[in-house]
Each structure stands twice: as structure tokens, then as C-alpha cells.
Length: 389
Image (cartoon, rainbow, N blue to C red):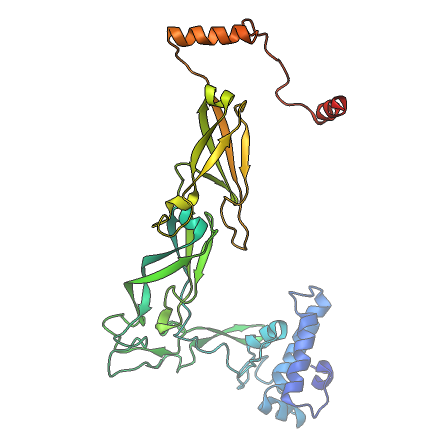
């Protein structure tokens, strides 16, 4: 290599190690074969890498500055530590480790637990007005035998002899760049950097055990099927006795015998006989509050009177404001009552005689019927509106 190594990296001869490493990272981002496949760039990358191998090693740099040959013994084959693969990785990912520096280090034995999800079925009135429920939850809790440490009483974790507590071991391979070292998690300690020679008998060294416990969850008013209530730090305790995750309670609202929910509105259908539809009547309707425990003792209305005006047709709807489901953010939906007028299916002789007499009085002995489209178009409705005026 005839070209000056400092010139290859673009640094001064008195540059310190950090400046040399910074310069190499900058050039590696530009010249690495994965980024720049041009043959000339690849050749330049080899030269820059070789220059960095020398200038980043104090002994080789000293020999070079004295005029010696730092490559004696073959490229990358001297007595130095060799070229570390982490230097290339640092150039692209901005890591702080160098050829001799540490990697990620041991990972913590203590980690946050997973979140948990359970499903809870509630009645429509409970979902509408809120309810408190006691739940039985089977989750991981901190082991009381070792207090989450994982080691039996009187013992404690010790540094791993394989990785010497680093949590990772170096694997060396030879390539055209010289010795490439990569760091991998230690198999002996699973990257933890320590081992437990005498694990706790209750948790087998995990720091947690499974247990069934009780807790109370408050379901707010206005929830619907699919709503999730979050209970912070009530989920699984993490490995090593780590902090617990969250518990999510997913609400499922059971079908109601009378009311059907649509958003915050309630719908129901009331069937009345033909005579009641023609003459009008008043019927007693239950409220949703009637399903609440001790509703009558609390003074809430459990029923109300719904007037059916004379001449009500089947399919007529009555809108009752504020009798639906309370909203999560305030307000309350409506109750929509659909009227179904029932035609009698069987008549005795006297009933048939009276109906025929009524038909004669109304001139309906031979009704022709009113045939109309099932659904009018928008233009048809507009035409009818203007015709009416």
C-alpha cells in the first residue's frame, strides 16, 4: 500500500482514536459494497478498511509512524487483535462499540410482564348504568419464596463463567478483511450474564408463580360490546419478579328480552290488536332501569305510560327522548318504540258479522287496495312534495 494511510482516511497525523473512528465510519457509509457496488468503490473500501485496521491499533500505528511495515505477516494476519466486524456495524447503525469495545452487554433478568385479556359478560342495564364486578384472575405473581430473585434462600445469582458476566461471547471468522469478530448471546446464561446455581424450589428460578386472585373491576356507564377497561399493573408479573403488565377487561353485553341497542338508542316493538290501533289506547311500558337491583327502593321509574293514538298504523314509531343508554361522555340516547297492529286470524260467527257490518258502513265491502312502489326515488318524493303544495 503506497498511499499514505492518514490521507486515505482524511485525518491529520496527530488525530486521536475517536477522530480516526469517526472518519472511517463516514467513509464506510459511502464505500461499503452493500451500499455502493461499483468495483472502484469496493477497492477503495478495502484500502480504507486496511488503513483503519492499522491506525486504530496503537502498536501497528506506532510501527507505521516509525516507517515500518504494519502488514508484515500478511493482510490482517499480524499479532494485533484483528479487524472487528462491529466497526462496520457501528458505521451504519451508529453504535458506540469499537474493535475492542463491548457490545450490547448482558440483558436484564428482570423484565416487564405481559398484558392479559379477559372477557366479561354483563346485562344491558349494567352496561348502561355501570356496575362493579369481582373477578377471579389466574395470572403470574411474584414468587414469595425468593421475592422474584429466582435463587433459593441463602444463595444468589453468580457471574457466568463462559462469558465472564458479559452476556455475550465473541465468534471469530477469517475473511478478506482479516479476523471478523461477531458477538452473540451466551448460550450458557442465555445472554443474562449470570446463572443461578441453586434455583428457588417454588418458581424454578423464574421469579414468579401462577396463582388465582380476586380483584374488583368497575365498568363505567355507557359501555358497549367490545369496550375494554384497562386495569394498570394487574396483568402478568414479569420474569425475575419484574413489574406487572396491564389487565384488559373486554365487555360483552348480553341480549335483552325487550330492548335492542343501536349505539346509545334503544329499540323495541309493541304489538296491539286491530281495535286498539283503530280506537287508541294506553299501554304500560317497562324502563331499562327496571332491571337494576333494588330499582323500586331507589326511587327510579320502572315503568311509564305510552299513549297509542286512535288510527295508529302498523309500523308507526314513537320517539321518547332521553330514555336510551347514557353515553360514555355524557348525554343519553332515545327510546324508539315501533307499533305493530295485529290483524285477528280467527273470528267466530258473531265477530265476523260485526266486521262485515263495519265494512258495509265504511264502504269497504270490495276494497281495491292502493298499489304503490315499494320505495320512491328521490325525484319522486320531490315531485310529491311540490304537488302537495
